[in-house]
Image 1 (cartoon, one colour):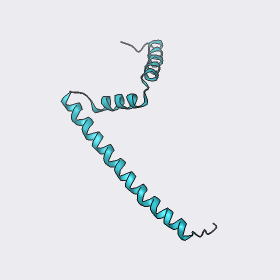
Image 2 (cartoon, one colour):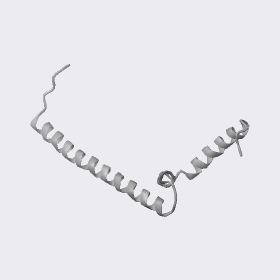
Image 3 (cartoon, one colour):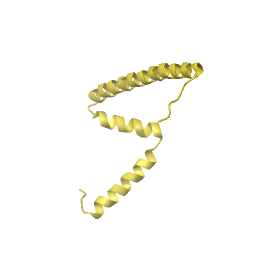
Image 4 (cartoon, one colour):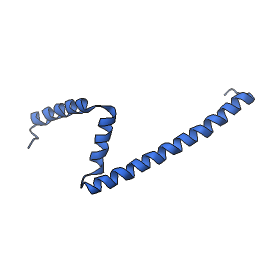
Length: 86
């Protein structure tokens, strides 16, 4: 494996990247944990499963309701064909 030498400018850039990157990753973890707690609290208040709210959030975020409905329609067709519907 070839040895690479970094200039002092490269080292400074790397140190800055790691400092800022670590801070951003920590903030992301904190935000995710906060959202998880909020979803859990609201789900309990509304007598729902947190997974339902999380799925709805993801669909809304991606603006993908039409995609989800199409995928469910296809799934429903398969289940009907297999005789596994109510």
